[in-house]
Image (cartoon, rainbow, N blue to C red; front, side, top):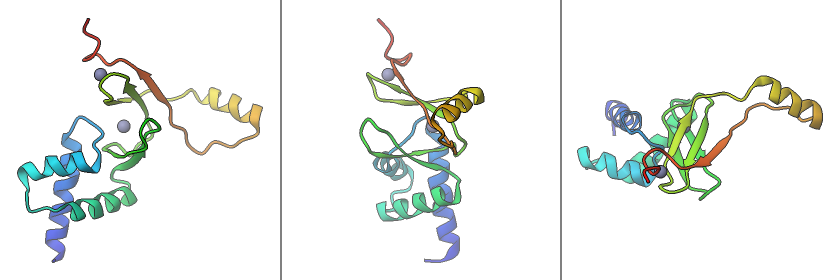
Length: 129
Ligand SMILES: [Zn+2]
Ligand SMILES: [Zn+2]
């Protein structure tokens, strides 16, 4: 396999993640990529996802709720909201107040290098009663 083809496949995988309004699992991504690019196999997708995550282009996340690996198109630190009903994961673009981190650190003596918060509830799609 030549370099050009590798780059092209990686770009297709990255573009697919960016185009989806979700945090797809490898399986979900594979099914999506299959629609347009049936020649790209699962092992190629696995390999490229790993590489993209290592390069920091995307982020690999594992949610407590099911332990399944998902991919996040945003590699910036951000928090997640998980719908109790449909299980969809939404990005929450608010950051924990740095003074709150300061309080946690001074109380516990622990040093924070990063943090991730998961919010749980019902999303607007499911909240139609
Ligand atoms: Zn929902
Ligand atoms: Zn996210």
